[in-house]
Image (cartoon, rainbow, N blue to C red; front, side, top):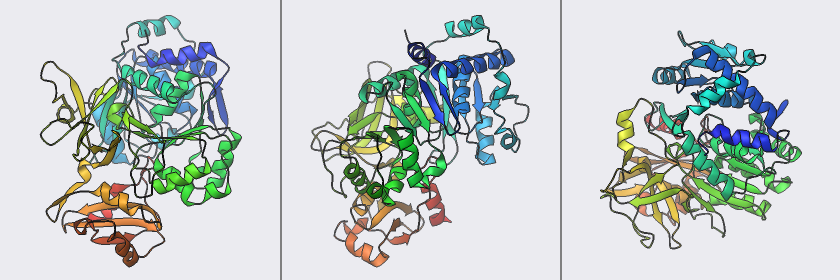
Length: 507
């Protein structure tokens, strides 16, 4: 019985011990070496705290060291939270106050960065100190024997609509269930070589990191700077024979918008997965034109469903002003759409819109030390009054199309009441993307002035843009203010930073 994610790592290690599992610029590691180092770290952690099922903070930048620390924490029988090494001090302190961790793990490279923060009396373990330790296998075996699949594996802190970090609690069972779906659906195997873009403190990294571990694949940590120099990015991916990627759309758009796809060739890339925000069809079509034989898939889901709850493998052409479906539920995961009265919307109803609810093993166990927020969104299934069945209310507004596929419209947070009409800001953005000159866009609603503010990047002036939009949008959906930017701001996860745009509107 698989009850711990480490069993998947160990199975891959036994099957192919000398296969390279992780690659970074100046180092690569085999399954055998990676597992051995992780076990040392795990035993070292336990020898210091003699506790299990406790939170441990990892303060290491995106690297093999960070991955070894993650697995090490799990070998110690505890769970981890990764904190960005560039976090603002307020966020760092807020996470520590919520978690109350038993220990902070860092490495020599990041030790000086950690010293800039206030972490009071929390003990700090330096990763390199575990290198020469001798592991007591009996201790690790005893730890494993006492673990169950619903033990917490990690707590991932997101910002949320308030900007305050809230910790989503994920178990081994949730990650195992999700990763098994990823491996089977996208045929991840020993020949898969991932090109990793997302940070390890972002939920999207669960997909490529742990499917690599489960399937005996390889993951290359792409240096972040290469996304600012796309030609070097192509060279890196070709030299490492990367054949599979899972990126946020903003990263894919950067490559497409700089015309790299027209001048350079990805020699081995044949699987392109994306998630985290809406993928503009215009840039997707650029990628499809450059790699017509590749598989493209739109993955969709919040952190609270491990990473993903629905997916759509692109199998037809889309116009620039169309929406790419989020498709259907993943295996062992079920989706429900309900209206404002909690009545189910069926697939044959293409006119009604509602909120997406998720049930199944992918679900998180709520928010860490936040029962009030947990109770708001992890609720009893409104369609089931017979027994306890928890579903997650995503806050995503969706509908069915004529093919029975689910289409994402907007966030509940992005649904506004303007001039007496209920409007989805995502619907406005979709139509704006249908204009050839538009590169990127985002709509913000200014509640004080009751104005729809459009931020856009593209080779078109405001008057001309407004003129073209009149042929696409109803009068009450027209932006009231147009702000042209030379470059869209991005947050630490590589997505368009809507909070930054909101700050420009609200001041």
